[in-house]
Image (cartoon, rainbow, N blue to C red):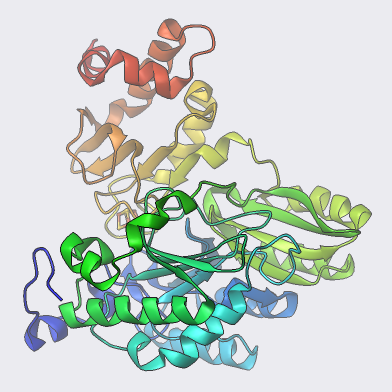
Length: 454
Ligand code: SF4
């Protein structure tokens, strides 16, 4: 199959740098990434599920072998920070001893409440097992892009429709699976519909195509003509894709008498001691399991209604929020300076300032992305982005961290710029208009001019 922009990757390029240091690589346990506070290991346990004891063991190991900080990423993966070369092995040993399985190869991301939400349309774990059994050789190919993503969305109370992926399998109401590529639940391009066996065959064919094309090939690179030849009926299923609700914090009833509590650590970051204390409380109150979820949150499952409420009350004492509308949830902040060697500013400190100075920006219509540098680790999607650059900040009004800034602000003037932006919206927003709509209406040139004014 042919690819747009295809080129051969030679052995020298593949081995020039350790994979953990390569831009665009996933910092797995085998190849942790160097950051400003040591090494960072990212992992996704099988099925995104952990027992309470396993999560506690992970928190204890993060404290013993790292700097005690754990993060949940926007895609619902775990990150352990502040590791040393020698402590990564100890962390890996602790993970093994706790019985946590971290599958090799590309992450397969399942709907977080698979197996416990009776309203799901398909069996995500069975499909994942089939993919891993039947495609094990292809999935472990070193020629697949390190960040290749496969989503298995079984529907139900919360879906993964807002999560973009190279390849997605979506459960349909009639028991069949839709396979689509390159996009989220609304934008991905459908290629096939059929049984679980058909879905595995289609995904295998796509993975082989990507592996043939080499290490940097992503689903978006597959030429339309090639896709149509391989999957001639693909376009006919376009209407089957829909946007559904993404995972939310709060208490949710899944089955009669069985509740789950969704919790979000502030900006996705938590101290091991806070996490351990929360998990101890969850054990005491009869919690069953942890399910990691996109949106930097996790669910504690199997709670009785009264215990879910007690645990929710306790969680706030340990720095977790169960409020889906909390303002801090509208901020995506990466580790930033002090925690990452590439950061030009302290993202978490600016996030605290934003909460105090610019409530209007956090009313829910837009995400404010605080990125320590142009890499944009915390939020790979368009947002109101403040990117750290040498000597100051680039403000991208609706874009990614590496987009050309609409205005550049000197280091010491960022708080003033944020206040000006908040005042501009407050003054110009008409009744019922959102902050995002107001910014779009005013336009980048007018906003940039207002921010530059003395
Ligand atoms: S975006 Fe943030 S976490 Fe990522 S490399 Fe830059 S400063 Fe570090």
